[in-house]
Amino acid sequence: MGVVTDILFIALATAVINNLVLINFVGICPFLGVSRRIDTAFGMGCAVTFVITIAGSATWIISHFALVPGSALVNAINSIAAGSVKDLLFLQYIIFIFVIAGMVQLVEMYVRKFAPALYKALGVFLPLITTNCAILFACLTIAKSPELTDNFLFALVYSFFGGIGFTLAIVLMAGIREELETADIPEPLKGPGITLITAGLMALAFMGFKGMAG
Amino acid sequence: MIPTIILAVCVMLALAGVFAVLLGWANVRWHVHVPEQLQHLMDAMPGANCGGCGYIGCSEYAEAIFHEGAAPDKCSVGGAAVAERIAEIMGVEHVAGVPSRPVVLCGADFDERLKRPEYRGEPTCAAAVMVAGVQGCTFGCLGLGDCVEVCKFDAIHIINGLAVVDYEKCVGCGACVRACPRNIIQMVPFHADAMAVVACSNLDPGKVVRGVCTVGCIGCGICAKLDDIFTIADNNASIDYDRYQADTDLSAAIEKCPRKIIRMEGK
Image (tube, rainbow over all chains, first blue to last red; front, side, top):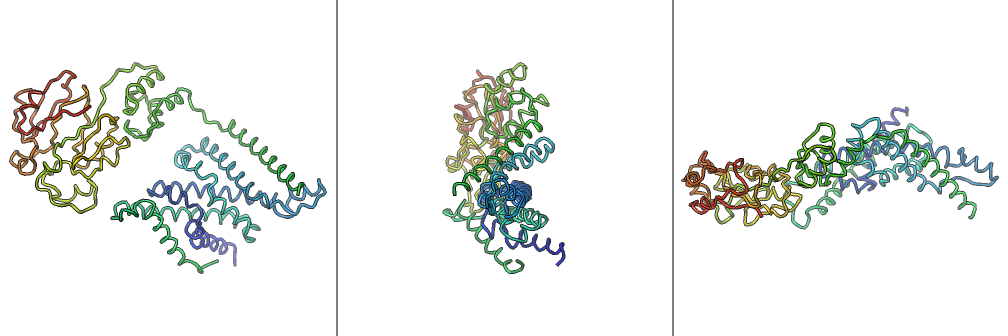
């Protein structure tokens, strides 16, 4: 298959078939918390897409040059200490969290300075999602699956469409919840109850995509 | 085992060092300058973000004061104290204003309203107002509490089917005025702690009003004969609040009103 086909394949598989929220159940907190209105849900989705893309590429670079066996940093340590360090993958989690939080801070400062309009739109959401589990999940998946670990472009496409899938799920949820506002819901199910049931039904519906692609 | 721990510590320290330098550099390099005066204004705001001033939130209002010279007395939550603080920061003279408070221009509770069929639709005023014949009076309070829903200060409640303002808690943000689909809540300058209010909005002729309500204004004009602060227009009495002063005494009209619909509202 050609590169374009591969990219389309990854995009579809990530955004819809292996949707972060509805299939992998990560990023549930913003999914339930910020899905009351479509416009704020869309803002949150955009912010997550933005951060997940940056975090995915940054952690791919770090992973590639510093953590995996035979990478530059591992080789350097081996030559200095003459030791036999195989890899630094045991530091993956903590380094990823650290890098994501740091990168988001950095990007937030940059956006605030050079794109005030974007900062006004995303500003409230950015601090909320610095160490969101959906983002860490995407980074760890990239580090885990061989076809993403080897190719930076694929990793980029994966993280971007992971964010698109999150946006899709949260905007759908917000649309349903706006309708639920005016629905006649039994008293005990009002609020979180009906929201969780709705989320469960949406996850069931998304299971229908299973088997379409990897 | 031990070398691994040392290795981990070294790597994390190096990473922390790199990020500390990077973020420190970025903070200085991309520093967004907030004028000191604007910062003081933001600190002076109560932070309720209620939108009562007409701006989206407290920081927008602070920016409007700073850039466009908006009036310092718009904040109804902070009242005179915040207005004075803002005026002090901006170096302008603050003239003490009169606080505005909402009054509900309907005085009929559930039992006083007539021809009220059972309503089983969606329990909001915005929906009920679209249903013809939801209650006899086409001007009166629907009692489904859209105003209660929007009030951030727990200052308005539905008591026996009628919205009643709790003036101890009300800050005058005007959210209930905007929420009422029948437009029967009105902002009134409170020159005194309690103000006389003609608690009826019905513009129908007296005969029709008598048919739908036991207390509604029938436009008889007795109050207007007693005191010219009252005007009768479209079969409904109203008070000219521009002329209402702290010492205005309307007890004669309140006493003589055959429907007892002129009431004192407030603390």
